[in-house]
Length: 112
Image (cartoon, rainbow, N blue to C red; front, side, top):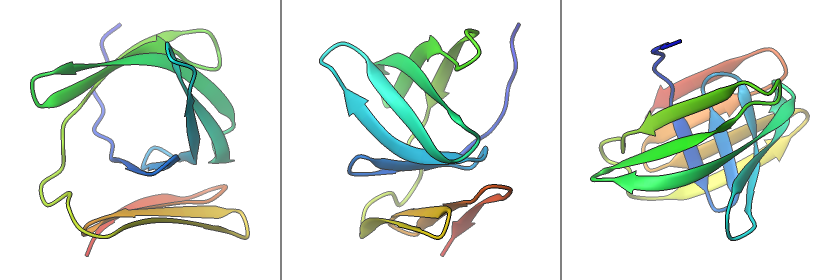
């Protein structure tokens, strides 16, 4: 099945936030990267990453066992201040002027 969905993923250090409704931290064992969901949609997905020109291609498995391939394209103006904040069941990640907010029932992408 081919599904196209636009999403914004921001990563600051080990912490990330995804505009599709989950946030947490990443870990890497030298072969696979794990995305530990701590806020929003529960679970953990595992995948591998490779460069394809300017893009980053992620392939792996979802918490329900289905597989995926995602192509991530850099956002414009992705340089500048970065940070991640977690409090009271929500997580916010900022990269330059881009900000993604996630809590148990809401997610949002903002450009400042």
